[in-house]
Length: 156
Ligand code: C5P
Ligand code: MG
Image (cartoon, rainbow, N blue to C red; front, side):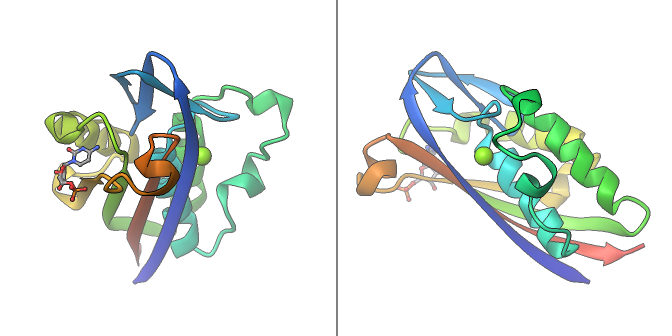
C-alpha cells in the first residue's frame, strides 16, 4: 500500500463557470490557469503521482509549454493513470475543495460520478468534501480556490 497527497490552488476572476472534477459548474467565476484550471483534477493527479513517487504534474506538463495551453485536465489525469497502470490499483481517494461560493454540495454526486468515470473507479471509493474559508484570506475573498486530495494505491 502507498499513500499520496496532492494540492492545487487557482486564482479566480469574473467569468461564467468553473470546471471542477471534469464538469462545468456555471457560476460568476472562472479559474485563471494555463490549463482549464480544474484544481480538483490537478490535486487528484498529484496525489496519485505522489503515492507512486512519480514526480508531479508539472514534470509531465510544464506550465510554460504552448502545446498545453487551455488544456483539458482530463488529459493530465489519463496520462497519470497510464503511468501507474500495470503496477497499482487505486483503493480510494478523499478530497477537499475550498471555495467560498457557490455552494457545491448540491452537485457533489455529479462531481463524484464524473471523477469515478475519469478514474474508472467505483464511486464508493471516492469522497469529495467542500469547505468555505470562512471569509478569510484570498480564498475567503473569492480571489482563489483550492483543492487537496489523498490517494491510497495498492500493488496489483
Ligand atoms: O466551510 P464550512 O464548514 O462553513 O462549510 C459548511 C458546509 O457547506 C460544508 O460541509 C459543505 O457541505 C458546504 N459547502 C458547500 N460548498 C462550498 C463550501 C461549503 O457545499 N463551496
Ligand atoms: Mg492547477
